[in-house]
Amino acid sequence: MPGPYKVIIMKMDQTTIFTTYFITFVNYHFPNSPDKFIINPTIPGIMKTLKFLLIITAFFSLQFAQAQKSEYVVLKNIPLEGDMGWDYLLADDATQRLYVSHGTMVQVLDLKTEKLVGTIPGTIGVHGIAIAKEFGKGFITAGRLDSVVVFDLLTLQPTAKIKTDKNPDAILYDPFSKRIFTFNGRGSSVTAIDAKTNEVVGTLAVSGKPEAAVSDGKGKIFVNIEDKSTITKFDAKTLKIEAEWPLDPGKEPSGLQIDLKTNRLFSACGESKTIVVMDAVNGKIIASLPMGDGCDGLVFIKDDQNILASCGEGVLTVVHQKNAKEYSVIQTLPTRRSARTITYSEAEKKVYMSSADVTMENNRRKVAPGSFQVVVVGK
Image 1 (tube, rainbow, N blue to C red):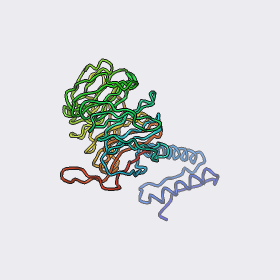
Image 2: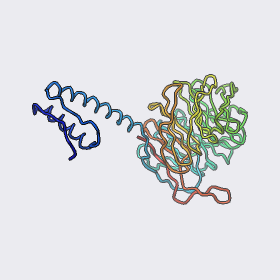
Image 3: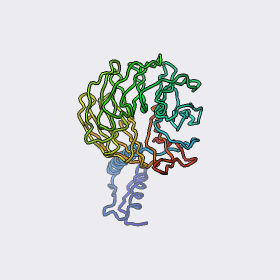
Image 4: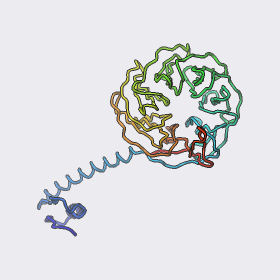
């Protein structure tokens, strides 16, 4: 063992033995340190030394534990059958289900067991899923059908089909107005549907291609306009546009989330590879942070005050909200290439992202057989 050791023991009680062991351990594992620990050759001196060492040890242990707790990791990959494309997925804690869009169907998993419990067929060109549990219904945008497919939450069987404008993409249920909103890509519009009666109650023209949207729970809806790089705010009941705010420096927004406590909107802007933080009251840009390439979604985790952006290049960018004005990137987690859409279960404390091995053939994406999986991330 390296030395020398400057340890003087005046009384071999339990405290002295522990302190001597600790100092010997440190000196042994850090032999090149210019200074060695020295125990004061008095019992009060030993106690003072021990108290100091315990405080230092506790401090660094706490820092290490907090650092470990803050790190997200890939927990597992859930394989699912099918070699078609995909878009949004939805973790719904009210029904304890994970709804995964996949080609011409939605695959439904139990959130607890992570096992497939059924499929919802007939959703050609499927994009998004919304749940209105109070009415026992789910709603799915079928882009190629220019329709919304309604299904029963218990049987998972389709029960109705509602015509929308061209190419409904993102979809949102707003409990305040009890309406379903579809955001129609080629129609440059929003279709409003009464969730109870399945009746279309109005169509709102917007300035460009609408993407993901969120509700403030008080009757206001915010939606990304992808080709205009703006966020549009409209009234859920009157369907009147109240504002349209530029996201500059953000370009081509897709994913969108809101923190109702701080009144902050988080927009994932794919072309600029940035997460833009906007004031939901006045449209002021608060911050812009770098993220990975190919992002098509993000989630906001209230417990951690973290924004997680799923990026198709194969990383998950994690941004921490310290307060309503301060934000920083705290982690870039390798996930899986093509994992670009995302959802979060607050009950399970897990993030889910759809992915597969994808190649390009004749300018079209092709999914490798047997490669479709849901990536699960947690702590």
